[in-house]
Image 1 (cartoon, rainbow, N blue to C red):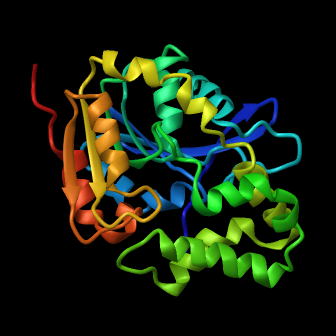
Image 2 (cartoon, rainbow, N blue to C red):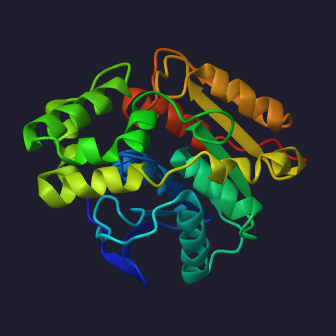
Length: 273
């Protein structure tokens, strides 16, 4: 399926590819793992009717450069995100973040000195005890997963993608998400990025969550199996002034399970004051 990122941002470790669309107040969409900006293919054009929308692929993901030696930890992603905001000339954009994109957005705000107009976190890594399940196995046994036959690796990734949705994914959508992780280089890139994502990089800002003063919205799929609802509740306890909204019948990938409801939340105004 056609999804084009026509702009490039040079970093010492490779090119980050991005694009923008629409006009108006800026809003930046931050994806997680093992996804890419392709997740925003329906959401971004809808938001672009009234906003200037920015999307990008993290280094090591999607159409951005993937190679050995890249620092793909959350702290490094946050540093690059801050530089990308500066490159775009955005002082106080709205930021929307999903999965590990939540941790990247929070680190950029709380530790990298960025400023946002408002922040929406949905089904997002934010803090607490989130090193679990298959992710934990990736961390502990990277060398085993890297040696999987290609067909077994592709089956594992496809199964992981299906596990993230409650409604289900069409075969062509699974294929599009899977494509960057195919072949020897893609397989190496898949486990390279997972092996560098650590809970320690969210623990470093947890004590600052309660002091956030900007408007925050938390949106969560009630059927999320990757980050179950207890993670939304944990985050809401840490940021008590945040709005918390549940989407019934949706899993981890709200962009796929409930795009219209997610878009409605993203276009709703935050309460004033």
